[in-house]
Image 1: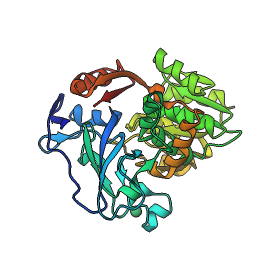
Image 2: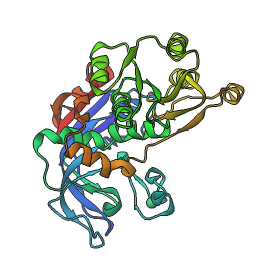
Image 3: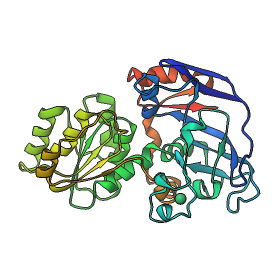
Image 4: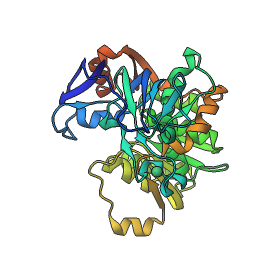
Length: 340
Ligand SMILES: [Zn+2]
């Protein structure tokens, strides 16, 4: 099969990889219907994370089950399935508490690589959610978005305690931030402030439910949020970048008693204890337990109540994955869908 492999920063090649096979009796093998490039794939692509030799890429996936292991009970060949970037058993104490991304048996799908034609999915019963029937083609991008960016933005909103009557600010206008806007809308937020200086992203944020757009960032961005909230700050802030600047902006934009949901993969973030102490904000985040939300998200997409697939503004054949990475790295594309 063909799969994307990162050989060195900036060097993604689509090459022949071994076809996956059932290794554990709890595995499934799927044929991908669509896959994509994630903002987090840019960390190794830019050399911020250093891969140890050639690394298979990709952790987002939807597809049709080809084969299942002997112990798989609920997932069957022929089903169209969606899973998250952590495979999880669904049965351990942390899974049952809704923290499938910290499952005691978790497997990071990025180590398997799903920018490929086929993929092995560990812990298939716990990991995968099947659609009621094969989806119409126009729903596939939205179902793929549920695999990571929608589920992650949703967790950001839940971690930020978004709810009716609240003012929500979203730091980051990548696909996750935009899906955070969509989630805030669905969860009943009264006012949703998207922080973005890119016109096409501002437009999508408004389509997803943003009531306001703030173009300032850093201290100016914080001042603007304060000005819009009677000097108090937002009730809920979703942080969807992962840098020192974005985290500081998120915490300082939150009112005392408010909540920050941080879902941008943190790189070099250090929090000053004294500032945290006096901020009186709740901090919660980390790798999103997307699996917790998948059944509900798939249902919303199936009933066409949400359309998160709009974050894909460039579609390329898998063979052109390198161009997909370039387009996202240069911010020419919000998110790139790859067709295997
Ligand atoms: Zn578990």
